[in-house]
Image (cartoon, rainbow, N blue to C red; front, side, top):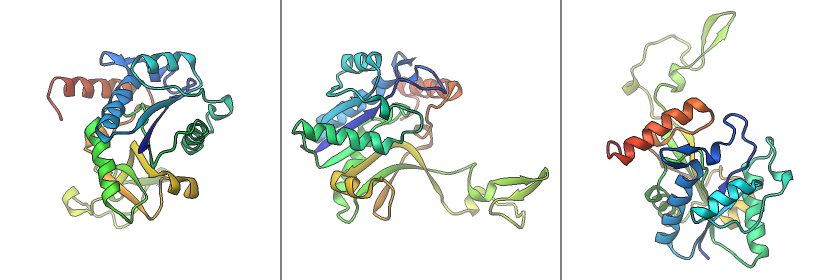
Length: 238
């Protein structure tokens, strides 16, 4: 098969308890990512969308929106300290045990519901056409948090992070800098098994607009993103 879409959603969120199935803009948070992944899988073809979770409640919601739950995530991979790489590699291994082999994996985090099917398909196509590339991650342009505008504090005095001369810079005077915005992670599965990372010298960046770059970690993020989703549904942003 071509692409395995993996949506990781553990049940023990502490920043915003129950966030993966908390209703946002009219549907559970995880539903936005499931629906975009299902549409992308349909366009790409010969692909599958699964949710890896330790929660029966999340699993039931995910199934109701069309995702597959081919296995339950073990408790050992549902702790705070467990990284997504372990979770994704476990999902790939579990699928291969069921004789489902894929060329690519796309990790789709529920905490970035603004990302849509067009983004996923566009990113996948970019990776496929760049023959020297092995993976791709979403990035977004840094503006107010550009390194030239950041500072540390030493005994309450400013200690610029980069701009040691205290020179005033306009945004248009600085180089373009990007941050990893977390909406998508794509890799050739052979590469991921070998490198155990989406980030390396053969990783492409797929630029996402500012409004799609926000992630939900707490209630403030949740409220902001809910308004962004409503604005998209009303056609105010695209």
